[in-house]
Image (cartoon, rainbow, N blue to C red; front, side, top):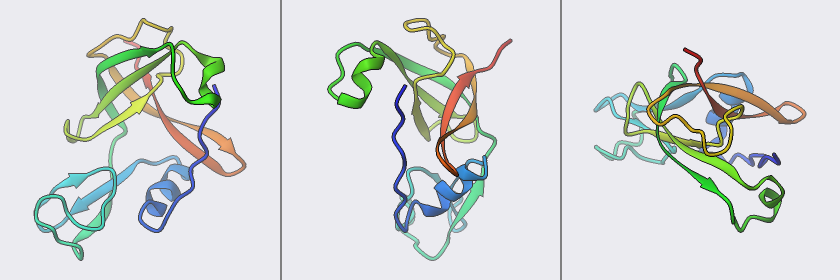
Length: 137
């Protein structure tokens, strides 16, 4: 499946640098202990800008819902239709979510509620992206 190659900006660069090291980091506010993703200039709770840091998380979560994309409008993804689009919540904070096509999971067979873990795929020389795969029981 064609993958989008990230173009980091100043705010997202620490996130993508960590992904390239095969690690998952999200912003953490040391003032109010809020984890947040996607990254923002200020804390979404207390609005602090100076107390944001990047915190490594486990890369484990669960599938909360999923759909099958059968008629998507993105040209680069059309050859791969149909494909899964799952909503993944992090174990550290269920309020933080990511989307994934769940590599290795057959179309329309996404096990809602299943545990997942992060995997990394190289999409350009030295540039990785994060995906999620179902953890075998």
